[in-house]
Length: 187
Length: 154
Image (cartoon, rainbow over all chains, first blue to last red; front, side, top):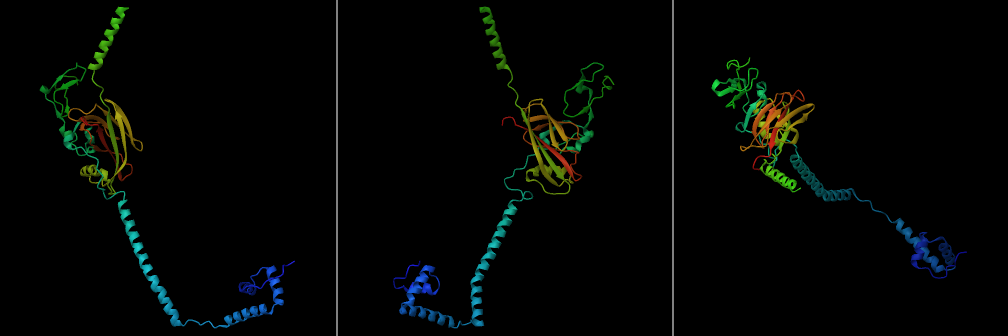
């Protein structure tokens, strides 16, 4: 059973009733109260007329000139943002290019890279090698066939017997062919 | 019993003298093999290979680009011999005669792939490049550079 409306409604309660926002028990109780209170019904009627007059008011349509002026004002405010965006893109592109150049793995030698040192010709002495490989050596004097010379007798002596080819050479910085036949050794 | 103890003391004495008089053990030699790929097509040069590239191009102008494939380092005792797997199935062997001498020279026996043994005395701390006959691709050449360390007095 609904509770009866036992007091005079406030203007906010009447407005809520007119807008259909009162809960169902309150709406039923207020309608029962309005049925016995002509002053309350008059206030509700005044609200209805106010809304009717408001809805009847004409809404002026903006003129084309007003639309153009509005668009122009909007574009004028957006234009600086566009320029800032362009600058941001340019700066980001420049930064990416600098980073890309610095990150190149080859091509430009960083200052702090120290190349591997290479021996010079006077720092290496080739003791023996296959003369056919003389093109393999870089930056040093390789042994070539035209450097091979016959040793002279005073520079060496035979240490071994008739079947051995062991010789001792006093100065063997230069490679030498030993002609054992010329020294009377084995062939 | 006392006689045995005396003999023991004498033995310990001579053993100590022998240890003091013996030469200190010779240090190992650290051998580094730098594996380089030289290209006849690409002209990019690894900045670390600038000196080597200059020397190699003076010997063979067809080689333009140089890049480091890898570096292999091994510590070898005097007369020690080691095999280095340099690239693909290619191997190089190195034998050291001993540590750097008074002239700061180290004697090495180096056998690169597809080449005969090269015996040479070199200053330590610097690389000796050798152009091998091995081609990883038709446009490339395998180059090995060998360095011995440490240098005497350092």
